[in-house]
Image (cartoon, rainbow, N blue to C red; front, top):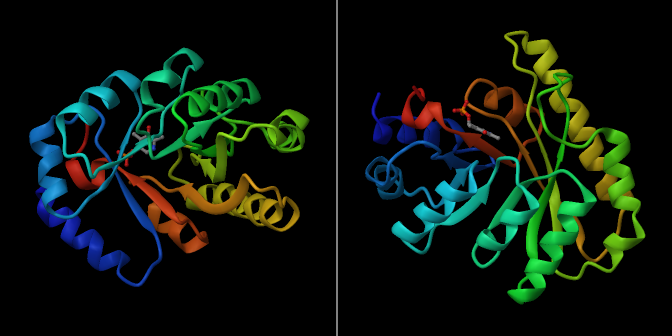
Length: 222
Ligand SMILES: *Cc1c(COP(=O)(O)O)cnc(C)c1O
């Protein structure tokens, strides 16, 4: 299937679902990304800052750029002027930097807190305990240029669907719990970013509001 066909199929499959499709364009050249753009994709995700800023410069300005990969503090300044949503916030110190750069640009920066829902050591993200430490931190209350809009998670890399579902359910429960109990002006739980090419159907079933798809749209990365 080509990009156009994959997107048309996806749109059909997702027509009755309230879920935002983030097309993950990492490693893909602008020529292919424009095919997705022509099909209506405006939410694009990248996992490396350098690639993200280069593509932001080259591609149409109505694209909403999502940072989905691990973000180093010293790189926040490069994306702060334009980033639409940072999915991968995994520490209070990163939030501090985001707040500082948001202030410089006079725009609150929308973020998701990334939660580690797979047990693999290689995955970034906050443990459940760390997540609540961040949410309860006094410092967070003073960060006027941070807007926490939800949570993000990456399921374990396994073919075991039950295990994947269990991880997504865990994240959904945390999301609902925070939504009910944390009423801070700059913590508003509205987005739950979960689901990639191999598991997005399960994620949507469990209540994802944002899926991040690369290979389903563009074919596998070689
Ligand atoms: C690469 C990537 C995706 C997309 O992966 P596919 O399996 O190609 O859909 C989603 N989320 C993150 C964080 C990624 O790095």
